[in-house]
Image 1 (spheres, helix red, strand yellow):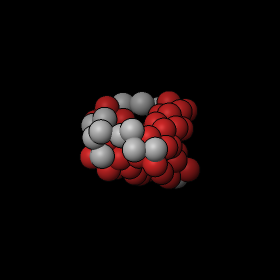
Image 2 (cartoon, helix red, strand yellow):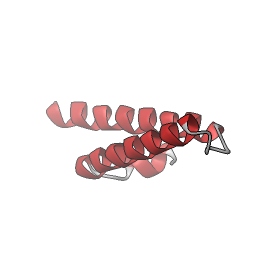
Image 3 (cartoon, helix red, strand yellow):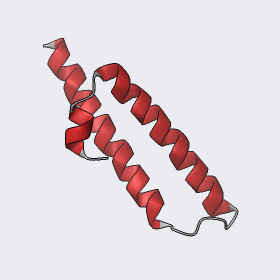
Length: 66
């Protein structure tokens, strides 16, 4: 997901997005562990999406606190 799409969401939607991405990443890790994952690059992409969403979430929370 692009950063511009994430910035358009509110804090609650971002928290839900992070939760969904973490679940997806867990599923991918389990597939990798059982040798069922064909595209291992999806792990990296999901991990980066999680980091991107968490960064934007922290920015929004910091901006709301000020």
